[in-house]
Image: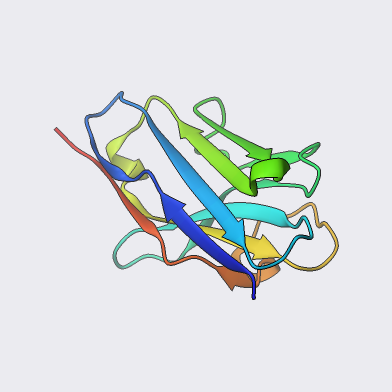
Length: 124
């Protein structure tokens, strides 16, 4: 069965960088992949999504110009490069797959298979 595993989270100072990785296994089909985050007491929100072939990407306004999503389908891996991190980026970050046709939105309800998350903390 399709499984997703995130890694790369940790503690970083404001202005620093982290790179998150999402590795998929269980199915050979290429799916749209999204990165989402959830801070304590808040709803989960979309951060960035990428189409199955990697030709289309979407970003939340709050991360445009700072985060970059990419994928290497041969390695079944999707990356999220996070630069110029801010304290408000602190959250658990999840990757998720959409096993249906590509959709231009990047919403929690658009995705159906989820990893367990990795903690990102931005603090001095």
